[in-house]
Length: 219
Image (cartoon, rainbow, N blue to C red):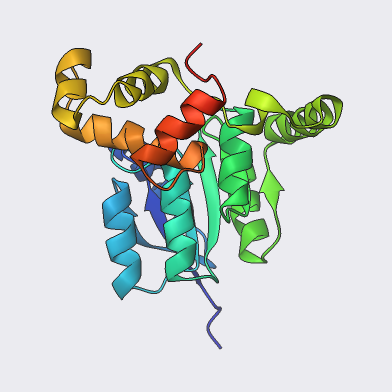
C-alpha cells in the first residue's frame, strides 16, 4: 500500500530559496512539492484549480501582503495548513498571520531538520513555531497584559514606508501621485495600501483615513 503524500505548495519570490526547499523535500517519501508560486496572485489562482495540503508561505511576497494571501487562501480551502516562513521575527507579523489562519511560523535561517519537523507538525494540524518566534509571541502576550492592549499597541507595527503612504492617502493623493512622490511603482503603492488595510483592519481608504486620524498614527 502506498504511503499518503502531503501535497505542498511553495510560495516565495526567491527562486534559489524555493530550489533549496524543493531539493530538501524531494528526498522525503511522505512529502510532495506540487507547485511553486512567486507572488500572491498566483498562489490564489493555483488554489482555485489544484488540491494542496500545506503552503510554505513567505510572509513578504512582492504583490499581495502575506497576511492577506493567508486569509484568502484559507477562504478558498479552510482545511489548508499554512506554515509562514519569514526573515522577520516581528511580533506584529507573527500575530497577524496566526490570527488569519496560519498554523505555524518559522524563520528563513531554519535548518533542514527543523523545516521537516515543522512541516510534519502542521500536517497533523498542530501548531509549530521556531524557538525565537515562540519567545516573541510570549513577549507580546506579556506586553498586552501589561498595557491592557490599548492605543497603538492594538495595531501591528507600521513600517516607515507604510507610514509615508498612509500620510499621502490622508492628504487625498491619488495612487499615481503617491507613486510619483515616493518614486515607487503603482503596484508597490497598491501593495502598501493592501498591507495597511489588513494591519489596521479597515475596509477601504476612507476607513484607513478615519483610523489614522482617530489613533494619531501619523504623529
